[in-house]
Image 1 (tube, one colour):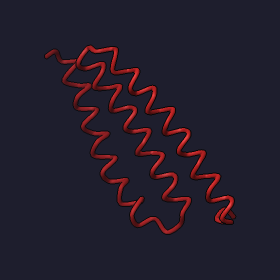
Image 2: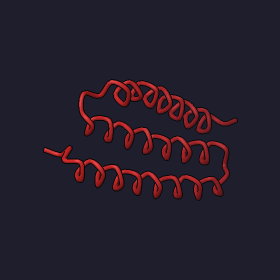
Image 3: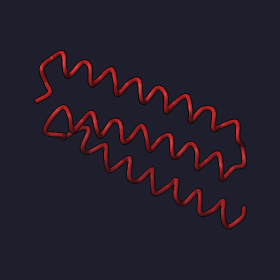
Image 4: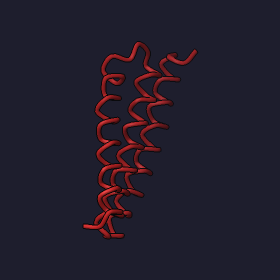
Length: 91
């Protein structure tokens, strides 16, 4: 592996550690909005991790998976936000 690939994998590992730390906010978040934002951050971190792995392993086909996951993460955020608004959980 090259130095660049090693750096990309190290960055992916840092994002994985960050996602594990954010799981605490998902579990212990004082409000529903905190939990929604934390889930969205973990989903976004997952997209970044997949993209970093694709670049490190030189497999551009994996970027399609990251793109689909990003779209699903966006739709999930919209659905959860709509659910919390309908329950009266916002403001």
